[in-house]
Image (cartoon, rainbow over all chains, first blue to last red; front, side, top):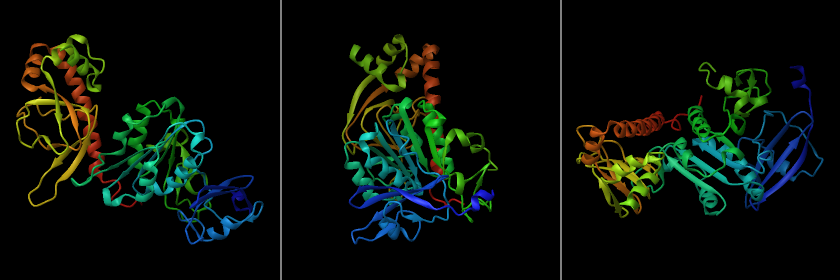
Length: 252
Length: 154
């Protein structure tokens, strides 16, 4: 526990330009790494894509080997690099598209390194769809399969109506060489995992982002405790086989 | 008829079905085509035909007076359209609209029911498939009703 309180400088190890409007930067230290996606707007200023550090603009301007202090949550990140060589199935529900978006950009930036890339997104209704413009842009690509489904819609909606797990039996991927990244409400993730396992995906091939409210973000207060793990330190991205024993426990 | 039998046995709902059953079902079946916007059936109409989607998307709709139409689900290639034809009172409980050009296999309900009654092996084989499909649809509907994206996570 005392180790967590030692001030450890992070070093910016990688800056990946995704496209003209987006870059991904990652900082690493010997014991843990953190990453942040920074969206560069047309004005030239940078804003974080999620609730990352407000100093994102300064962070993006840093040169290699500059020293950066990161307070936390440190956490884990999507296994975008580890998934290279496999099919990638990205599954988001509701607001879960926001945490998954950096992974989508990461995969698209090195599109040639992956097999099939599929994005499934479920929302409450057509008006609740997040990042609509980006979804439309990605959909125009010929090398990505995108399915958007909503729970309820009017007759003017021409897309899918139904739940995300219902789309899984018909999407193209090789279950023996695929990685699934999921973020959404837990109950949606539970049904989604069941559908992926029916398709033959093993628990080791499934990664989830567990959302728990955090307070201290450094593994002290226990607000975000998830079984034996802290979401702020060990998560939010977990490989499913590592949390499967506690995932179904109602009290957790 | 051989072609129709091949279509019947090639539909995912009938995957793995024995050829003798395939012949029995295709004896009651025909190919149908619906243009975009056309209705396959309307709520409360007699369910005289069992539909299996071969191509296209079908929107299942509910109407309430003075309210806009609500699409409760979309079904696609490989799906079946309900089992209302199988159990009394043999009436559809929603509208089914072709959202685009739709090709379906239509199986005459009375013809198939009579064959299931005469050959319980066929009836049981079909019943297992229907229970599986209906159970899956019920689970999906439960998840939809929960409105999981509607309430903020605590």
